[in-house]
Length: 505
Ligand code: FAD
Image (tube, rainbow, N blue to C red; front, side):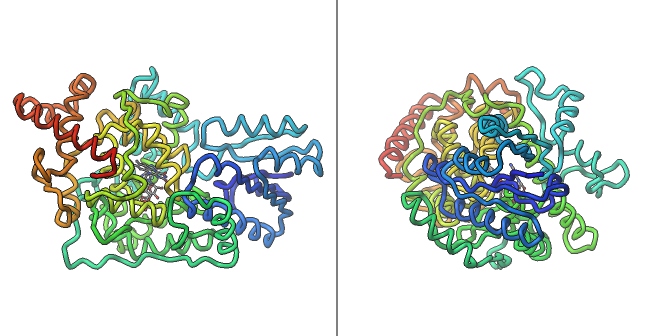
């Protein structure tokens, strides 16, 4: 039997491999001419595929590894030598990908059977049964609730459970995830996986073929094999996890990683599985080496958010990709490409993405997408930027995060926007101290752009947002401002938009 695995299905333990003797991998190149993916992302995927090929061969599999322009070209070559072959694959989380693959195979006289993608922790049936049972999302307007799903999965799997109760008595220690490190804090080491011969060869290929892509091709340190991914996991649970919880929402001017796991790229490639990273974190708690707020906080990201986003995407596509309930139409400001802005938080976050194809969750949510939300960027355009800029980006994961969570293009996964003024950024970071903009000013010469844009956003979207139920407090502040204040806010917001458009923010 032949198993056809994709570049994000590089799990040596995926179920179809148990009964296969032949594996097909197609390294397709033309997709990256259409979207200018970060060079480190392309290096990561192609290098991980080539390492996976060698690992499978070492384990005795017969591997056909094809470098081609497209899947179609690769399959033409494959079926020339294997006419009428029957292929088995894993379902892809990306919308429409399974049908496209099936059509490509059948057009060449072959057949394709797709089985459950066991690189995720929960199945489609499990989520659908939960959604049916709870009535979530059933009329297209009802919101899916991450927290309810998260508790459901904990109960079903027994992860961090003490009988029928959550370990420690609470489901969620979110309120213990909001500290910022003291000035004398030393950040833990970041593991580095230096490029080997295969990765260097891929880097050269990527640099030659995709020489106009945005992002720094140098400084590549991501794990490209399962062995390296397991080392990254071991490093995370022993070195970074203990403080992960406390500083989960923090941002520091000199720090790109803080205590985040940096595991998303390896997880999304299939090099490690969600269940094993969760088990490793829980073991660390049980051995007394990491506190509950860290371990629960991490488990929530994987069991709650990651699985939830994948299923909500599946259930909400294709509408989700173009959802834009706030009718936001502004183009992305040039600062997202140049990093050139005096706004310290924004320039640092863009720099992190440019240099590594990575920014941590709070930079993604509360700086990069918060600014775009307040500014009025079209969610689909922002989604494009996230999709091409990050090493861990795939349509199934950027779309719910960027269009849903970050841009509030739909209320399908949250009932209010993640919108905030300079206040939040100042509370959770030390950026404001190094920034020429004044965090406490809303209007006037050097007022922080987040402030006027925040109030202007609430006012512009009053009709949609005031009634959402969870925005009462914010609108009570809106109601306290008089006409003169609103006129100054509108003027300042207009001036900021004009300056941002000119790359002069
Ligand atoms: P940690 O902070 O250590 O978290 C642990 C793991 O939890 C992550 O590795 C990831 O697998 C999972 N996780 C946490 N939150 C989410 C979430 N909201 N959705 C999915 N998985 C989650 N994640 C991606 O994997 N790819 C993306 O392209 C991506 N784009 C994002 C865009 C925006 C606007 C936002 C707000 C979030 C995005 N996320 C994305 C989710 C999250 O920010 C990243 O998974 C995380 O920052 C990756 O870094 P880490 O591995 O150090 O994560």
